[in-house]
Length: 308
Image (cartoon, rainbow, N blue to C red):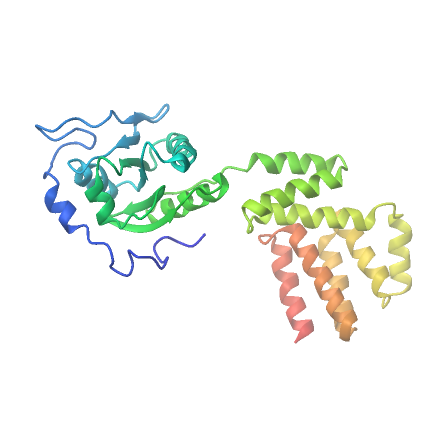
């Protein structure tokens, strides 16, 4: 998910002009959520559980300036363009509302009925619904159309919050716990399916990538006598299969740095297809550890030195 501040979109190309909406909306110095004098009140904002902050609010053209533009100066606003007749909207809108309440006021969901507010939809170049826009600092910064998986939606909202300067604490995907449990109990097939399902929804999920690499590692050492495998590698330091297996065992027994050093040394002494196979195997062990492991950073530098 790219940063909404730098996403190439119709907004960054200047295709949307909100000036007319600003001038049409009633000027307001009122607190956010209070309808302008003489106007029909919008639906009451939904309060955040335990926090009292506004999370979901219906917006009209009369309240657009105060509830979207002005509010976005301090809190990111996500606009959900919808209509009663729109079946896909009935799939997406409840998820957006639940995530907004879950956010506890960190961002606000502004719901705009396109049938009741066609001018706003026209200004935003809405050609189909559902359409979702993020507004920060009085300006739209990103958008998407159609129904997307919840995991992708969460990533998009996190990126919007970060663009708005809001600290984001990403909760652990509960599916990871189930996948990890299957791995720990030795049900490698179930673990593999679970990790692949997560990656199908979130291709860059580092934890799922590490889990899947761990499944492959566990399969490679299944039924192997660790002591015998390590002894065989020590007896034949240039035997590629023996040392790959020894490195796997070392990683599983908490000696990852030793495993990395073993394979970097093997890279230095190898060439051709053997060298490429060792390199790929070492990268798979890096994936097991995850990108933030300091030992991996050092081993990557050693590998680069060995290769070049």
